[in-house]
Image 1 (tube, rainbow, N blue to C red):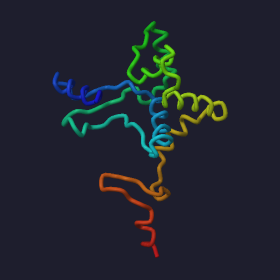
Image 2 (cartoon, helix red, strand yellow):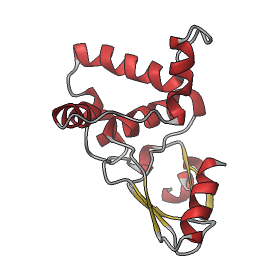
Image 3 (cartoon, rainbow, N blue to C red):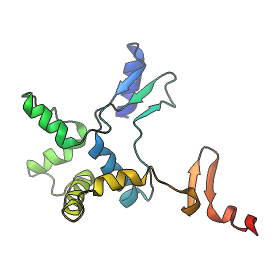
Image 4 (cartoon, rainbow, N blue to C red):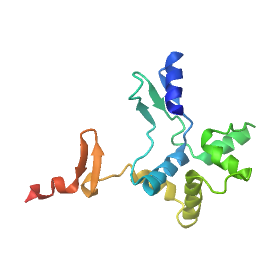
Length: 157
């Protein structure tokens, strides 16, 4: 709903692009949340054309910038963050009104733990969605539908 409103308002004022502030860590966390909670392997794309608002494009200019580098840059330039909606649960938790962490916070904590054993874990998660070999995937979906490895399994005999 928020995204639809954003697209509609951008279109209304004559914009053809919407830039979002997602960064590298958001991408990694989203990949893991999709796997652990959505039963899917996918990522957020650095840019994409809107399917509902013709001529509108979404871009993520900070896609490859790590969160820690953004935080450092903001601190260096004496800037502060404006809390976004995805932080709502965390703010409520700080007030003692919610007693659980968000799924994104779970992923941050998991990655922090995994990095103690493998400092390249975030890089490896990111690279894993670049290095997909469809011949080794049980099934996948594309614009033509869902494809299962058994669909072509016996063609080589």
